Amino acid sequence: MAQSTLTLLQTDPEHSLFRGDLNGIVAVCHENERPLLGLVGQLDWIMRGQISTMLRHGFLTGKPGECTYLPTVRGKRVLHLLLVGGGMNPDPGSRAGLHKESLTALKRNLKSLGVEKMGVSLQDFGEHSEEFFEKEFKGISVCVVN
Picture 1 (cartoon, rainbow, N blue to C red):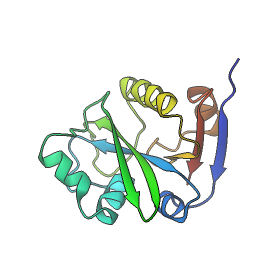
Picture 2 (spheres, rainbow, N blue to C red):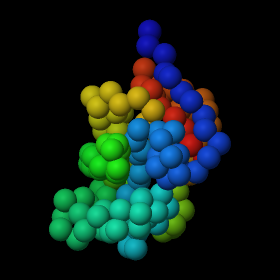
Picture 3 (cartoon, helix red, strand yellow):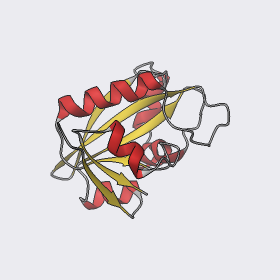
């Protein structure tokens, strides 16, 4: 039976990505958070509004089950971003975890990408336990960043 390759990093996600600790990162985008908040908002700011532009043009919606791959070149590196639909957030700014269909789409995309050292933000997933990540990401290499 496949085991997950789970790594816990005690560092912030965006700096881990741009320092080279990670090759990619997963960020949750909600349908009703404008401006973007949380990790996706920080990434959008660093990327000069590229994610907001995708939202305005309808390439990304934030609906449950959505999983958009956005490869980005930074210097000589390709950074792999997966933007996952978080649905409607009843309390914009808070993070309660993902809808089942979004989690399923995310796992499917992580497996097919096969990128080592993909980061998932503990805050974007509603502060779930290590056991949650071990169970949900069994057989998938992920780094949980704080």
